[in-house]
Image 1 (cartoon, rainbow, N blue to C red):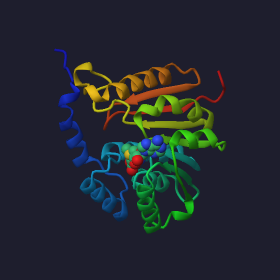
Image 2: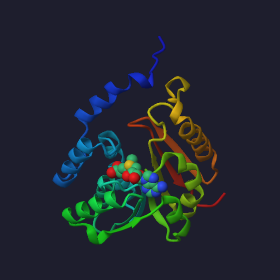
Image 3: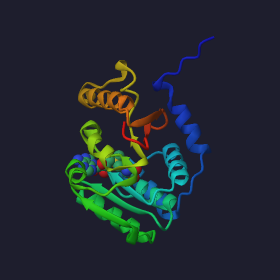
Length: 223
Ligand SMILES: C[S@@+](CC[C@H](N)C(=O)[O-])C[C@H]1O[C@@H](n2cnc3c(N)ncnc32)[C@H](O)[C@@H]1O
């Protein structure tokens, strides 16, 4: 018998995993998760947080770049997994959210490891020339494709590019789920994923947890 899995039926998996999964969530992070739920800020879901925690712990990068800080939840998780040698640059277009993130990094005692930049992810990516062991893309979904060349340029060889929400509520994988107003995001995300998996200098996996997360490693030698 062939088992079919439909994205519309996927919530039960998400709920099961949310009840099962454990990852190091500090009291500050727990408070932030509650604040995000109450105020409607989208932050990484528990299954994604657990996955990201394992990725960062196994790679142990010393430098990370995040696009889409929000209130700083995923940034704190990344920093915690990197340890005290880790440095994070995180970019957010909303000054109010960035101010909350600043307070949260302070509360957690890691403000000295973080550089927060208020601005547009694309502009900042364009102007950076440091390289990073980890880039976490969680900003505007319609821009992932245009951000990709800079992300690849800024990624160390052996570094990880992790992109959240790449299946966008299942819409990227199934036409019937597409909301009319989201069609541009879906088209661009499909093009982004095709470009990502076809890019010869990267090895990529796409994991259908949360809203879908892609993980790419930059190969050691340029092809
Ligand atoms: C999904 S949320 C990020 C959640 C965060 N990474 C977490 O899990 O804690 C996406 C964020 O990207 C920000 N954003 C939207 N457009 C942006 C842009 N052009 N440049 C930088 N940030 C942007 C939004 O304000 C929002 O806070």
